[in-house]
Length: 192
Image (cartoon, rainbow, N blue to C red):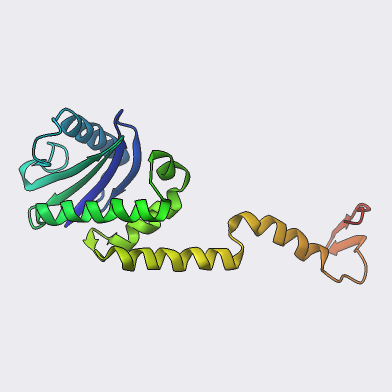
């Protein structure tokens, strides 16, 4: 089972953190620091598997990682997971990000965090691998994008709210509002 997915840059700055096992926030920060130190000090020509750090479970857990350009993709898994299977899963995740963002970079992870989390949820949920077929994942992301566009997206919400208020057919603007013993005078409002 996957216990955590950590993505951080070459300087140890976290870009995506997902824990599938509860850890207090200060413990999560320590795990991130320890994992970065364990992974970043390794040469590029050594194996991409190592025993989990002392904070995340020691020899019962493995850290499986890949280093792409400026980002480390680290999966913390228990002994039931295949190292090569997780390496392949990291490759599928990165290639899916690359397809969805057209040459994914660190800034895509920062500015499109919601989309990155959605893609990750298509691949892994609750620490269990859901999908490894990149075409199926990309198809689901395309469906999500089309649905967002048909709804106008979140950026169009304020404009839709204003137009809905403008199009309301009120016979007259209320001048006084009486609620029990409370009397509220509404000031004159200019038309839209």
